[in-house]
Length: 193
Ligand SMILES: O=P(O)(O)OC[C@H]1O[C@H](O)[C@H](O)[C@@H](O)[C@@H]1O
Ligand SMILES: [Fe+2]
Figure 1 (cartoon, rainbow, N blue to C red):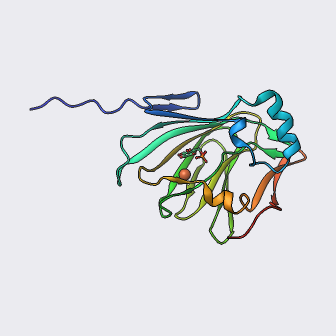
Figure 2 (cartoon, rainbow, N blue to C red):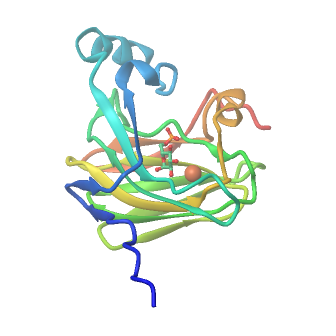
Figure 3 (tube, protein in one colour):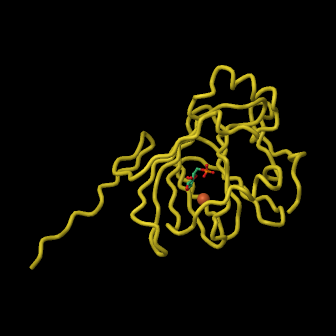
């Protein structure tokens, strides 16, 4: 009889992840053009250009169809003008590939959009699992005052297409502060696809 082989030693907690195969970081300077308030963005850029706004740790066994990428996304709290910190957002390059996000800590939104401009939101609080169905553009938004930490899992052959958001001038709705809470407002730069 052969000895059992050790499986990957992945540990994913709100504080971080061990066993990752990769890490990806986005600084404030990488997010130019994402936020509506260009003046507020420029003011922050003057002193915080190199600040990491979000980072992603992942375990990617391979890129094969049928394989899964699992990881943790950590999105810092903050705003540009009234608009909350968010990820760039994407649709999967293979449009029918899905994803789940399990909120480990913080408060936020999974902001999704169909190709014909229907917005879908799942509010994220610890324990909530957001499901991104096939053919949905998606981005995370941090509505709180601490890091928004989510565990994600998606097919390894999904890929990311960022052009779909760029071509339509952003997503249809923006998440903005409203008193002590939040609301969605229409993105005035949005061009229906
Ligand atoms: O790809 P972005 O929109 O920059 O968001 C960052 C990350 O978000 C999620 O966690 C995805 O599963 C990652 O694959 C992605 O890279
Ligand atoms: Fe995704």
